[in-house]
Length: 325
Ligand code: MLT
Image (cartoon, rainbow, N blue to C red):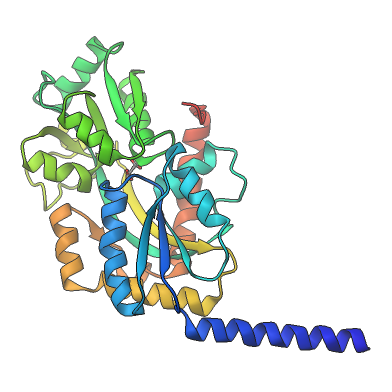
């Protein structure tokens, strides 16, 4: 009898403490872990949204780039963090879905991180250094086939968006050219501009500024419609590789069992950001589409993540992709 009374009292005290923590949340800076290098598409998107969330939460948002292994290092760090709302995992289709079919992760990618919300998305873009002798996608494919042994694809590591997009592209054209891993497509893009690698199938938001600057060449976007930000860039369907569609979406997660009212506060701040005119203007310039309002709920992200795993895991597993590449 005495023992159970103590247990009830303890549980009540924890609940009170939990509520107090949630009510005073956030009382110190929040860290968003970005699993790729600074300056790349994930980093840029996390910083734009993070800056606006700072205003809503009235608390410092720290962006921490924890890179390596196609994003699994950073996501693992977040999954193991305390479930107190002060560590947020930023990621995308690659880091929070694809990697679950490749890496022997020490946690359950679909269930050990609680969704906060879907943020934004963009198609991938097939781009090359300017010296590649190809004016359109068909010529690029012919060039890759003719030079397969020497062609290099830049990626952000095995399982990243740029890697599985490169894999999918090559599986469609029947080549096995080499992948050169970087800690993000930020540094990979620098090497593409410098001509040290040949091709990246990268997030359009990362490639677009370089394409507009004439520093790299674009061949197609992996979407059924052209991008308003890049009306001259054909779709893969128009360019001769019909159906090569990839929508690289990004979202926010927290460690499993983070109190619901803390998740609600983070989700609310994320929604404020996605309704903010300045944020939406920045997205439009980069070719990013904010998640539609009805899909900005934690539940919608969990359902979407599961649906994407059902869609992509069979393909990735049948391709026999290994963490070492
Ligand atoms: C990045 O920010 O570097 C990209 O999201 C990496 C990728 O997945 O290709």
